[in-house]
Length: 194
Image (cartoon, rainbow, N blue to C red; front, side, top):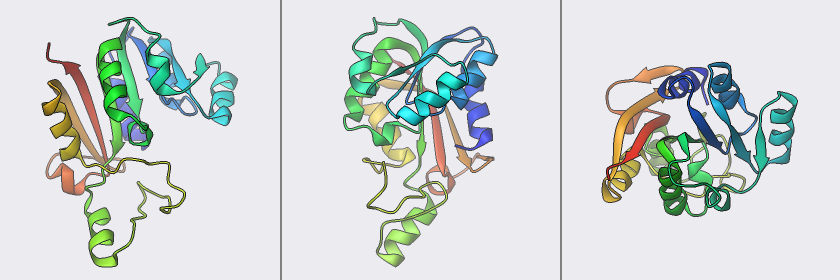
């Protein structure tokens, strides 16, 4: 995740919010939010990343994202964050619905598989893409779902999820036009319509 993208996500989270960072990795975003007055914790499955969080003094629980959400009451946190993790989850629909139940708002960030370089490699090369935003070969990628910004927006519409903000990035540059074609990453601030 680019530094600019991480700063943009942090800006979507009001100071003093209770946050739940699902798939928090090594805790860079969680640390930034806590330094800005937020409280909460992360959930991570990778033991090396958990050790890095603990070494940085960040509260993190070892666990799988899906089952972990069942332990939280409705609206028990202000913001649930799923950054660079949703495309790696086996049951995306269930986890996103649970995140929207637990959090008053949800921030989702993911790589855009609709980026022109991905399309180019698949169409002209006939092979699975490897790009700066998707640096893994097909046999070692952690990604299970390959979706674009438009795919995610269609999911939101079909599940009556309101998109409050949509941000697009190409590395450290924010994009304001043709995001589905030009953005390497997308970030969405969501809430339930009901």
